[in-house]
Amino acid sequence: MLTKLVDYYSRIGGNKYEDNALNVLTYHRVTDDKDLLRPLHLTTELFSKQVLWLKRNFVVLSLPEAIELSERNKLPPKAVTITVDDGYRDSYDFIYNILKDQGVSACFFIATEGLEKGFLWEDEIASVVFNAPNQLATITLDNKLYNIDTYRTRQSTVAELTERIKYKSLIERNREISFLQKQTNLEQENQNIFLLPEYIKEMHLGGMTIGAHTHRHPILSLEEDDDAFVEIQKSKLILEKIIQEKVEYFAFPNGLYRKDFGDKHIEMVKKLGFKAAFSTNWGTLTNFSNDRFKIKRFTPWDETELKFCLRLALNYRK
Image (cartoon, rainbow, N blue to C red):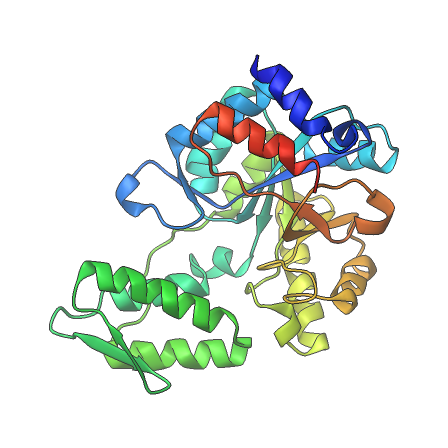
């Protein structure tokens, strides 16, 4: 019954899924601790279920296979592929192992500064706020006061500061994080919550695709052109050294076309020899020649098989 519903809703508007259409799913973090859940986080239980639902109701392809078939206009009906952004440790501990157990491949887009530091810039914000002294009830940034007197207010402050600082250039971002650290007398804890090179190599040898995601995860449209090019290039070179093969796929940080990146950044990606690049704009890939360097993706979140599959089926119409 569900398969028939998926078929029906995928076709509304004209058999679109049969017209060389690809749904590219985006994941970020997966955890086995519900207390650590944040936006874009899934539990291991839900992620495992979603992979099973995909296998049961769609045609799950590796990214290289999906790109090749799309380029040749040979995608099967209800084609999907899985991508995972950023490169946190749970990509190995949970996501990779779940995929491997279910015989499914995915592409992992990795921001390579995390390989050097063990974390990314937003983790520094979380560390400052959550580890601030209990007697410190507020912190300030640009004359705005942020409450951190309870765990809940610290959660909301982390979310607000992350969203605010995200849309700063790398220079401004580092300056504002440093300002927060000085108020609390805290720097990022010496912890590694990121992938290690040996994990990336194992994942690659285990059938996963490794993709680049810049080095420091900036908003490319806020950086000088030379700096943006280096950010893309550096992540590619670091990852190629680890896996000893070419890295052929790229995901734009934050990823909204004409906001976070533009046509000049697409030209950089082409110049560096990538085969395809991905945005975070919602939709389906149906015209490979036009969209191969700004491929739309889809973020799943539903917790029942019916809603998950129908929402994904309807995405073929976008």
